[in-house]
Image 1: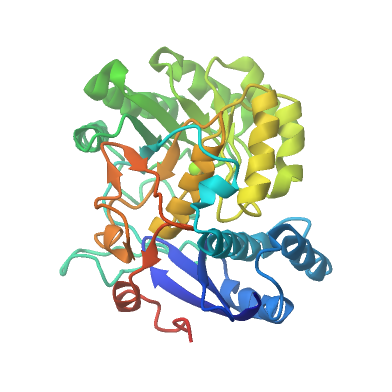
Image 2 (image 1 turned 180 degrees about the vertical axis):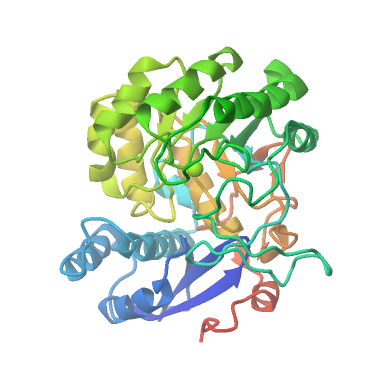
Length: 413
Ligand code: MG
């Protein structure tokens, strides 16, 4: 069997869901999803000639070929792996279809039939769609007449947006709980928590108190039967985020995510060693090497690789195995469409130390409609039942995908 074509499409969800399709001379087509990045489909197209004529079943060898071919362009880490991760997943889909087995079988079989999903609740607010450099945009699927305030994810100053309110957090928690989710994640770096200087990583006591009131409202609303995680998006200095985490200790959080930049082992370890809250990181790290030191040094407690970015399912398995040796659970970061989410679900089923998989798109009305082949909704009572069909187990609904596709990108052409 030989690869004859690589094609891409980008669907405008709450992020740019970037798909890569690998086509073979036997008519099999594998589908993978990549974490968005500027210039990503251009990178994917550049990699196509390296794959044409190759046997798609030689997944590890092709991974190495792509890695070596991009070594000059910086394949130690970085967005090259957003591309390679999607390609690798598509190759597993081809192999699964060729052997007529689900991907999880190829990964060594399953520990569980259902994958627990946690709901990302952002800052308790509603719709948001971000482009490839995190500018908010009005999405075509937003309700007509919805007020869209263009916003940068990286530059708001204190007072620009109304402060996040405990009532919003409580409402969002109860809504997600009613949908059956038993684990929720909320942002801490929200309006109302900016200090006098938005660039210096410092937190005021007033900001810390506001964060505690937000999470306290969630805790009071959903009680002890729901796990609560919080996310800091690597914004703070180690000593101030320690103050936050200590105030949050009574809530016995599932984890506190990205308190400081994830590649600074010393800063992560400082936070981890000073608080009784599990520290999570990983969504911005690449390859086994990206995780090796922070796991070996126990600078974190929960490992959160992103399957559409880290380098692929196989790399993620090696990270999970190493984490398991160090008794750490894995809770994959995930902002993808059902395609990437299902690929992640196969991985989650295949490792012993799985904790929960993220779901970030509950506000996108066509999320479930984007694929066919699974009972809907895909997430039922906070779980995804593992597909038993060959390969990934779902097909893209191209009619729906085309309707929401980015017009300035090719659509599998
Ligand atoms: Mg995060």
